[in-house]
Image (cartoon, rainbow, N blue to C red):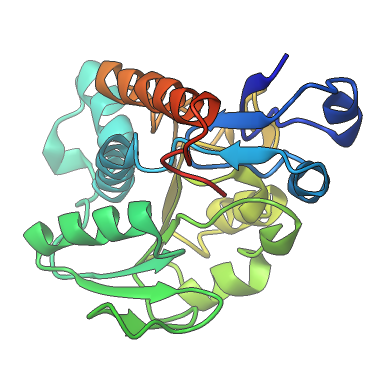
Length: 261
């Protein structure tokens, strides 16, 4: 077997790589490759390619769906409406517009999320390992943003990057959205902050327990949950498959794949 197709969450271990002596290409559907043994692959001169860019628009769209649903309390309002409760008996859901959005990880998906913020007249900031000089957005630290969107890669380097201290710095009106990897947010700390009103709401497409749902969050009505589908649509899946085929075609023809790690 010369080519393996996997996903970032499943990855490919050193033992699995060693069990395939003819392997020359590892392809990942989507942008994430956190559980692929990259160094081990490189030591064997195995090329690793991803589907980066194939589902960016889909993920960015879903991010805003989660953010709007969480901020505007769409799910509790739907439940109340079905129970016959009228608006005069309900708290007012706050605006989305004219707030401050902080994005952790201003990669290609982060930029798409930021672009969509302009329609809501939102001020955008970002936090990376270091400040960038090629974007018009401000570099922020926790506490500045009303909305915090996690769009950074997973892995050991970002595990629990959003912890109790970060959540407390955001404050009781903040909304947190994660469309990256569940490991980036400390789930127990998030659940406590939501229960105690130290942040207002959250929208999560990914979580540490997946594919099992996050038990700590299931009883909370200020959380919107989806089952890791931010990057899934008919268009995005087709784009990902097309990218895999093109990466494999190029590699087998002796050319460089489209998106090499």
